[in-house]
Length: 246
Image (cartoon, rainbow, N blue to C red):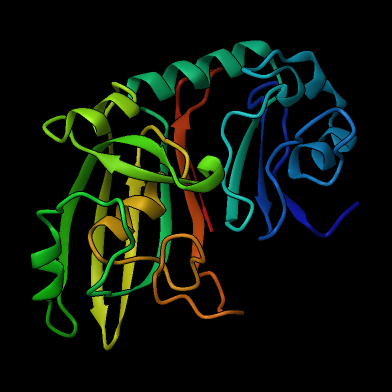
């Protein structure tokens, strides 16, 4: 057994799913059949019944969602096809809730490619100890060399940007408190796009501290302060709401 994951909830007939904690710098899922250094593969060794579930990708089985390699936090894995199908439907209906905790820094100069953000001015005016809440909503488009980054795009934005983006809008609900020069943020999403929360935070001039991709003030070796700490969904067996938090 590896120390790179920790099982927080084991499956049984009444709760046919696994909740695990993944450390930073480990992938959620394999890139190919030979890739075994990831959270899902470690879990497959413990619970081979996961292989009976057909997921979005053949090699991902019952993995319901992913988090970035550099992010630590909670993952949900379904152990039956019925449970998996229910979780995917809950995502579509906005019933699968994920929350992220971040320590951010304010920046006057954002990276290239971000559109105007109406919430930046409110962030800039925050006083020490003040808390504000707002929503960041956008389309997303791939960006940069190798398409390794994403950028928000607005429906009313340039035709070229909208054309590159998908047609679906994604929302991040942000509660942020200023603590000296740092900003503590709790971000809630119901559906996720790759790097959604990190990009939406950077968009309002609050990139995550230690974020090499989205923070223009990143310093080499700086700790990445971003955790997927909360999951909420309905149990596919009895429809009771389950909440897991670290």
